[in-house]
Amino acid sequence: MNKKVVLAYSGGLDTSVAVAWLADKGYEVICYMADVGQGGDYAKLKKRAMSAGAKKVIVEDLKDEFAKDFVLMSLKAGAVYESKYLLATALSRPIIAKGLVESAKKEKADSVAHGCTGKGNDQVRFEVTIMALAPELKIIAPLREWHMYSREEEIEYAKENNIQIDTTKKSPYSLDKNIWGMSIECGALEDPWNEPPEDAYQMTIGPGKAPSKPAYVEIGFEKGAPVKLNGKKMKPVDLILKLNEIGGKNGIGRTDLVENRLIGIKSREIYEAPGAWILYNSHKELESLTLDRELLHFKEGISLKYADLVYYGLWFTPLKKALDAFINETQKNVTGVVKVKLLKGVASVVSRKSPHSLYRKEMATYDKGDKFDRSVAEGFIKVWGMPYKK
Image 1 (spheres, rainbow, N blue to C red):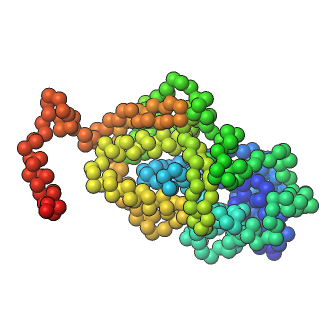
Image 2: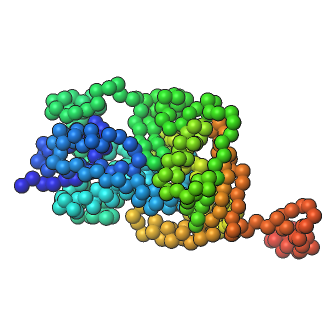
Image 3: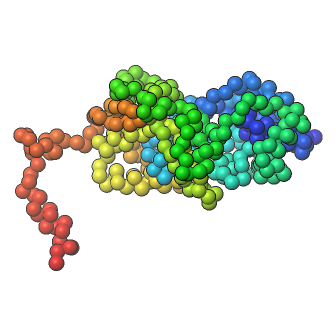
């Protein structure tokens, strides 16, 4: 009887070749496809997997769970890796790996496999998640094990084994997309001196070509989560996708980063996350209105640590669980409405209000109605500066 393996399948060259390679090794291959908003013709990809030797293909729509339990948690945490990356790809890996593990258990498979390269972050994210959730499963990484070292060799293998692959001209870029954004690498981007070519961008118009008239959006939050767009209640997935559309048309959400990979090398990536950046800026401004100084400043350090945990593939860990409890506590009063102005690549928060606002005009104003007791300032300064007085 053949051994069973569930393969995280994308339908690209690597995982299509992996199906045949695993089957040739004596495995009964079941392909698992998770829909996190990447798009694609799933009927076509299912047919491709079967023709490559898969015995079964599972397609699971995870968009709602991804938005609610992963994306919004990261948003509430304020997680940004190295100031520029809102972690779209990194966030999707633990939920895909979780689905892979659950499918392996249902199918009574003893192994799981992925199509990650041997020098990227994703292999770590997948395997650490699998180890945390199902340490009994054997993990197979074909791209680390087979003796093919180039795309050309894989294409030749595909031809020899009658594996269906796209024959259209290949984009020079490696793309990974979900509802929270897109990661783009390879091609001209591998030289950090090269300005990103305009054809690399998939979700956004160039800021210079964006409309000269600003667009405005109002986002309603409840306990740190966005729940309304322009006064209309929306599900998280729909709200994010709509902001992607509006933001993309106004050139919002492009970043260019030479980042430190977990595996120990630097890589140059460009990212598009129009909806994510609009929501991040809005959420941060609402926190400024509703969190006291010490909590706000302390949380900034937690945000950095949270981003590292996501990037490093440590989603299902005790520290991440503990930080979730802290973050959710901080969000109890992060409720209100934020208005954002979108103009030629810039998303500027111009208005904010909250029933839990800590801002008091009568204390902040320099006009009539000022209620701040200035007489206490002198004593405060003397005590505050006492350790430094010579």
